[in-house]
Amino acid sequence: MSWLIRGTRALGVAGALVVLCSVPPKAQHLPVTPARVAAVDARRLYDGACATCHGRLGDGRGPSAQAIGSPRPRDLTAGVYKFRSTPTGSLPTDEDIFRVISRGVPDTWMPAWEGLLSPAQRWALVQYIKAFCEVFVEEEPDAPIEIPNPPPETAALVWEGKYVYAMLGCRKCHGDRGRGDGPSARELVDDWGWKIRPYDFTRGDYKNGSTPSDLYRTLVTGLNGTPMPALEPQIVAYPGGSDVDIGELGEVLESGVVEELRVYLEIEPTAAELQQMSPLETEILVQRRLWALVYYLRSLHRPKGFLYRLFVDNPELRGNHDNDP
Image (cartoon, rainbow, N blue to C red; front, side, top):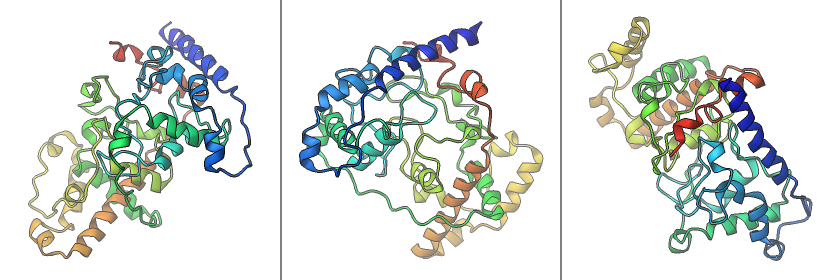
């Protein structure tokens, strides 16, 4: 019966979203100008479309927030945004907020408003949302990180990505097979103390975008307010060599995988060789490993049917009690 209870709660929130989605789109094809944005009644728009989850005060405590469970609606008063193009710890750009409003967040109750609200309405919401937090007045966001053009996906990159994943400790949270079931998974909390589940990469539909460039952006910026760190160059430029101590990996990974990992490390630059490398050579190494990780994570996607994803394999819709205060 537990699946039925979860389904009923899900349909209850879904019904609320249907009502919200009835906000009529206006001027979809007209150019966005400051005057057109200013003409939008952003408060009324926010109260009708956003407040049920994020709260009228932007504190993430709207009337539907408790039923939603994990992840909790964003507390807009804190100025802490997971999905950004800016470095870790920075505020998001206006374009970042606009992108999230437009695309939504897959596999959560945050819908994509692109087809429901006009560009002017969405830009007005960006400014209204920022007004919940004084930090936007006091600080400017850092410059967005540069995302290089993705290299072609190859079997060699996917192969390397498996061992980059191991060396960076991704398995501790996301599990050996990327299913979000690592040994630390049930202990993780966000900055507000709410339990948070690591992402299951076998599901695809990444919350911050599913293209290789989107996933790269997530890896190098991290997710503010969560245990997911930014993969900065000094982290990714780990040493290789035959004498590298792989620590607990040698105890927890399957013996065949451990041997393959050792083979991989033998062909990677040693600590001494890393010190001799030029900044350009180090950058090339770091970029290769990052893109290898991107393509490995994408290779883990295993399509599943809608009902399975909704009632069985969706941590955002199951386990709501894990997030009860």
